[in-house]
Image (cartoon, rainbow, N blue to C red; front, side, top):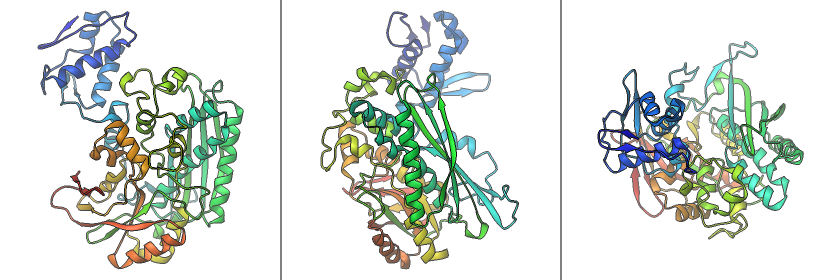
Length: 473
């Protein structure tokens, strides 16, 4: 037993709950119940380990997760103190950060490239050495959406579902590159990390074929993107299922870069994430590839815990693991597909549309923001002196309404995790709004002015839901 100033820790070696998780749960509860107060110093890692007779690494693991949750804070040489009350974030409780604050804190210390405000880092042309050109490289992937595809594959035997995952991985790179104005050739490479026992060759075949199929379709629409090969690694010790990532690189003219110098008095035009674009083969639910950790656990039911223990982290709080009401094949409330089909709807690319907007508007296209990590709050990273007002958002798509109803997640968290109706937004002078809407309609994508920018004197973002509730960030 470890005695704090106002609480004690006890562990049970016979409990099925890992020891580090027992420590987390007891400290988390103590902070929630005000048994530990903000600023109170915690026992040292070595002190707890010695008193409980456990390895210091076990305590360190517990402290790291508590720190990630924002509950405790590390201090040089002086150990840890209580930082605050637990956030009401189901996303963060599952080990995921919606806004990646800790990542940005590290990355923001690095050299920012040629255009510090750009959506992606832009460097000198190190590849060809042309002083008038620059390089853009980007890495991303399908995230945990591949686990939902794995569940579908195991339940149905249909490995072709992974073709959509190949598209997800590519689009999460391609659409970020759109935000800096990439308009030339793009080279992409894929990395597939799999557990070969669970994901055999037919899965890999569909991923590779899906990649080539999607790239060819994009080239038909003038998006010159090509495969540079990739790597398939069998890493059964690292993943129980499969992870699909991509990396894209391009050379472009410096004069073509969209620096995202977002200023006041611009209109924000949202490009819908739902419906069926002219270059899509089926209607899109709007899911994209963000928020899948919440989507799969809050929508899918406990049945998958027992059947597929390789498809989740058994260190998570059991109450947050596949705790939803649905099976993959159940009908989506308010939709016209199954729950599984809606979650696995391939991520829409806006490349053909953004290429056309850039071609017709030229320098009147002032900014482009891919509402990926951070969702509707993503824009705040590209206008530190700007107040973003979003007061005319799209109606909430059925999938996101179902996720919120199943989980009880607050509006403020939903709009930070999910795109909620539009996954790409462009910033233009007000007189260009109708032009953008008309261009989008030629691709059968709905667009609307969802807000505007003004000089900041208070919050960075004011957001009004379709129901009329207003939130600030």
